[in-house]
Structure formats: C-alpha cells, structure tokens
Image 1 (cartoon, rainbow, N blue to C red):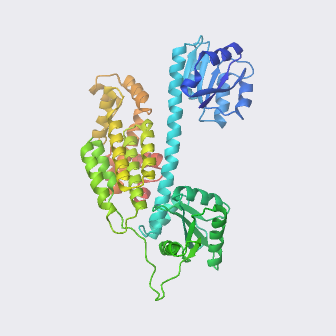
Image 2 (cartoon, rainbow, N blue to C red):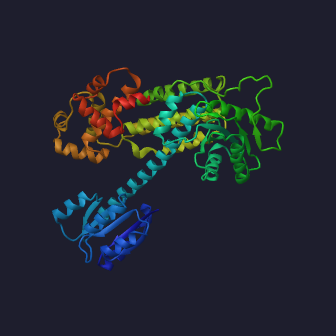
Image 3 (cartoon, rainbow, N blue to C red):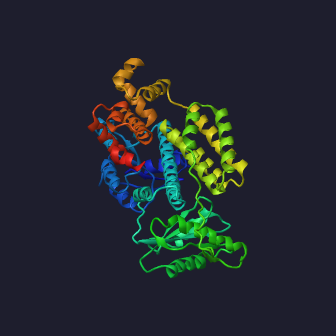
Length: 507
C-alpha cells in the first residue's frame, strides 16, 4: 500500500475525500492530514508518504510553497493540487514543481480517480525499476568477481571494472574462502556479508556455481592466521549444520585470485571423507603439482542472437535454439549447474534490455518472475523451460503495444532512420499531424520528449558500434545522426557519464 497525505484548511474537504474515495482499491491508504502548509511540512518530516494532495490557498503557508519546501527533502514525492481558482499562473507554477495534476473544486470524482490510477502506476513502476536495478547490479557485480576468480578476464580489465563498481582493495595480498551450505549461495552470501560487515575490505559475493565466496585482502605479513580468523568468525556466526568452508592459499592481489579460489574449491572435496569438520584448508599435492583450476571457457553471447529473434517475433526458432543451445552447454566440459544458471540469468537480462530499448519499462515485472524461476530451477528441463517462457513473455509484451498507431509509426521511423535528420516538423508533415500536437502525444505515450528519446536512441546505437566495430569515433558520430563530433561527445557524456573513447577502452 502507498501512503497519502491530505492538506486543506477546510476540514470537511479532507474528511470528505477520506470517505469519497475507495483508497484501498488503488493500493492507497491515508497516512495523515493537516489544515495548513506549515503544519503539513512539519508532519511530512516524520510521516511516510508517497502522495501529497494539497489545496493551493491556505493560511500560514500556501500549497505551492509547501510543495517547493517539501521538494527540497522529498523530491520523489508525488503531488496532486486542489484549487478553487482556475488561474493559469497557479497551473504554470504547479507544472514547474512537477505536480501530477491540477484539479478544480468542486472535485470531479472521476478525474481524481483517473489521476490516482496514473500516480499509483508510476509508483509501482518506480518500485519495480528500483528492484530490478538493484538485482541487476548485484548480478553484474557477482559476474565480474566470478570471471576474475575463474581467470576469464585479464587483471587490467578486472581493475577497470572493479573501479567502476566502487570495489577497492587497500592491501597487496589476498586469499579466498568458499562457503557451501544446503540453503544455497544467495542466502548464504547475504548472511555472510552481514557477519563480515565490520571486517573492512572483505568482499562477499554469490559464486556462480551455487556457493558463496569471500575475498579476504591481507596486509604484508598477514596470512594464514588472519584468513582462519575470518573463517572461524563465519563458522561461529552462521552456525548452519551443513556449512562447509574451504580456504585457499594467500598470494599477491589480484593475480593470485583464481588460484586461491581453485584451492578453496579443492579443499571442500575433503568434506566427503570428513563430514564432521566445517573448515578445510587446501593442501597442495605431495609432488608439488599446480592447483587445479576451476575455470570455465567463455561462451558465445547467446543474448544478442536471442534478442534478434525476439525482435523478429520468431517464437518457434527461439524455443528451438534455447533448447539446443542449453542442452549442448550442459554437456560441455567444466560447465557447472551454477554456470548454466548464470548464463540463463544473463539471457533474461538481455530480454529485459530489449523491452527497455523500445520503451516498455512498465512491463518488467513478468521478467522479474522469470528471473526468480530461473534461479529456483532444480533440473535442466526446468531451466530451459524458464528461459523459453521468458522469451515467449518478451515477444508477447512487444506484440501488445498499446500506443497509438501514429506513435508506433514514429518509433519505427526512428529505429529505421536514426542516422538521418529527424524533427517533429518533418515527422508531422509525413504523418499529417501538427508537430506541436505530435510532440505532446509523443511525450504522453513514451514518457519522454521527442528530443530526449531520439538522443538516447542514437547514443545506444553508438555504444553498440563502439563495442562491436573498429570504426573511428567521428565516423560513428555521423552514422548515428550527429554531424558535429563535439556535440556527439557532449550528448554521449550526458547519457553515459564518460566520453566515447573512455567507453570504448572499457570494452
């Protein structure tokens, strides 16, 4: 449920609103009310609220001043304005402050309910986006750490990606712990992170084969005792009957990471012959052979090919390819169930990217459900079916576009001709609609201005070319519709945060 706060200097208005609207049917509940702006401002400092409904004209502090002040501390708060005055200046100021609607008294119930429906959908969408972004960021972080510790990326590449994710190691050495328990890597990693919260540089993540991993940075002179101290702390605090901890050897950071992880995995094999123990240290082979690696060869990027089939709406070919590809991968030497699951999660994230590409952010929830199904799959057939369902859902969502025909045509035109000169005036002339109205309709149905959408689309195409081609930046700039390279750099930095050359260097 989302919380609503009502403000009006006439109590019968707030009381009437409470009784007039079936708030629960919109997923809303009244969290509080006030009779003037100053009282409301104080109350909102400690009252959880997602939506503010306020009058304009009130003593002590006007509704507009209340909105202006509350925006300083609660910029995400949604606001609906009520007013007895049909004043353009009030409306204009309210629009500047980012209100959802400006409703005249006496209140039209249907218009208010329609506004509430739109607001709650925005709140739900923001909640889903936040959940997905956090989940996706965690997957990317875990994936980068896993690839580093399985020798799939170079030390230089890992250093760059770690920097982008805010991972820093202050000490020159490291050792790796691998944690294994019946509850699985996700929950185990979460709890281990809580236990080691005060351990400074220790990095905990979900290893892609179902275990949890801990990278323990070590200062010069630190070694086995420091590592075992962290391991024993985990052993005591976690306390799971089925918990097993493998400890790898210490060495220079970052290059020793893959060897230490492999040693920790190898140490866990002793749990088969000594089930009463919890902590196992790696002992090298008697003849001094090198530790056996657990690296899995890098796989082709399935997501890109699947995305092409999704855009082509080719469900039959998608289902066939997914079944064949994952069956073949499952038979590959060194491929673990955790690796397969990680590949499936990556493919599902690519499907999500396809939806975002065509501006269907509000349809992410079904794919979140598919992600959970992939993570819960207990056997190969179930995993393949989950990926197929995700593909089918994506195709279905792309096919059920509720936009007006003219906006669908404009979006298709942008996709086909983004490298050419495009404007609302030109498109309005082509589709026989006034450019001002076309701009308003475009913003209403996509949630973005035409200029923002076009720039984002062009920058995404530029990023793709920077990743996949050896073209010069100037040539890429022109191919996506920017004839002034300086302006291209400015737009790229605006939407990506770094320059095109810096982005290319990270790939």
